[in-house]
Length: 591
Image (cartoon, rainbow, N blue to C red; front, side, top):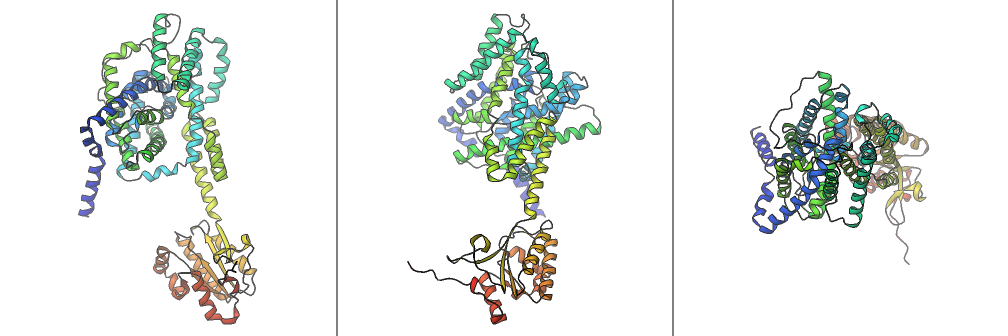
């Protein structure tokens, strides 16, 4: 017990000091210079993006800057990826906004919404940190790739359409409606009331972003667009013409404050459930990006350590006035392309955000809301990907169904996005269970190349007196009835059968229901006068048979390492009563 406790303490100590692996590398001036330049480059993208994403989350723009200061540095210091850029992201911002909608519909002031958002970030962080410390990163695997792809595509459409009113100058917000389709219809109905000046600014911002992305991808397109439209807004008195701007942003750094607010149990449980869903979705996005970069840098990556980093980042965001954050694909790509070597690049990014909060916020006063809407639309366009859904369908049609159902369910349930995700998870698990309920069971015979293959698929001759069956899958409560019924039906079709060999090489796990079925099967075959043998059973499965007494019940001498040994033993015991010719080795003819 004492050794376990010491080991656990040592593991937790390592969890909170991963930065030691790269801290020494900063003594190299080249590494320090590369990280500083990468950090500056990312900051130029992060500052306008973070304000846009904060508004997507239904929060004041400066909350995005708060979430881009300390959380960015904490994630880099305590995470395992050196290039992952953490901060406000589109999908998590949308989910945070969806979680805040009930409070907005109640007419709560924006100050209360800010506190609820910070509390949600804190809960997400505690959940992620707990998973990381308890080494439960494997839980994110319940969010299969088809679920994530379907949700991401739907989320991107929801995000993009939510910004349309800002481009056209319409006084409509998504959080005013219980369902997204109501918001879409209201937006279409309100289009005749478009404000021309707002539309001109929004269209100009979108056009500039697209042109720069296509013809000058190396330039900081977002920053250039923000500067141009802000100067234009100031020069023509855009606000005086009825345009909507960012307005006054509080100067100074965020202060530590626990996001405490009174709520009933039902509200707390609702927030906690949402925190779990966002925590999983956000981490899947972050770890996917980190894996992509680690495959190129060949640096060590730990899912559990990344959970610790993301968890501490969200906790920090929650207690310093921010909101939920995650790994960003676009900013991580910028960080990687800019030559970041260690996590220090993200520290530089966070410090530059701090300088912005301290000295540069007055310059953002005239930034048009339409520009931020254009930034969001351009950011999420890349999230719409049909090819992965088509690919999933080709590999396994069930995965394609899961992706498509998750996509439409997310759109239908929006803004209650967690329902679409949960439906996708349940469907993917249900279809997986369905597939494993009827795994492949085939009779095998000797092929001319000497291997044992599916007799029906290859048109091979089988024996009427001895049969070898291969079962491809684990044996558990959901498929034991299938195996038993299939075997007995096959036996019924062979009235002269004297021996049956079950190849269990593919069975990695067996539960008590499967073990009990094998015992009854052995008794039924014995009563019918058929010898029952088991071949190629794995050690862990055989040990389970020994513990349960099944090995002794069937007879330990009836378990064989190879199928050929079982066939030879049957021949020795039964002699001419069986014909093993279809199961013997062939001598290939010479050319």
